[in-house]
Length: 119
Length: 110
Image 1 (cartoon, rainbow over the protein chains, first blue to last red):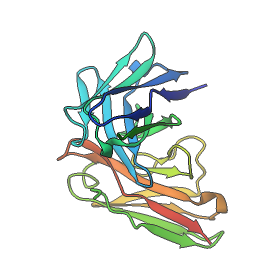
Image 2 (cartoon, each protein chain N blue to C red):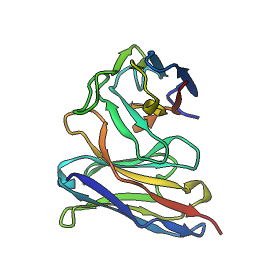
Image 3 (spheres, each protein chain N blue to C red):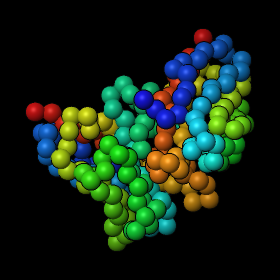
């Protein structure tokens, strides 16, 4: 079965760091472009980052310089390293798989992991 | 403030048709492909339409997508109560070099 399972969320103080993981099954993360999309409570979707290849990544301005997307092909897992966290980073974080034959479309999503930044 | 503009809400009766608009600019919808997602309460988004007007396997043909100039439209026919959800458009913005989502539209089936 093709699926994504996120983990690593939780309560963290402002200025702290957190690493989210997204374990994939049923396909290999190295063969797809992958993304992290977040949703603040009661708000819409925001694409935080996309990894097209190890040398081609994209970040929203709101997280540029603070977040880093990466993947470990041996573990078939996508990561999001989040540093210097702010209250406005509080959200459910989803990982999603890109459709190779399409343009920036994401067909498989994880269930999401909640990140709460608060003192 | 989203780069793509969607109406906050739309409503229609069961078995009727509804359209949801997504307005952008020449740097996003005007030159790139559009996707649409459905998000039921408390769940992850689901891809409905990709590349403007293509449906993934398993998505019924009640859902359709179109694009004209700097706007895109999602159409849903034969509305069902189970279609009540938030709907989002999404595309690439060539000026910002980021994937962007619309603000979302809440569909109510009366």
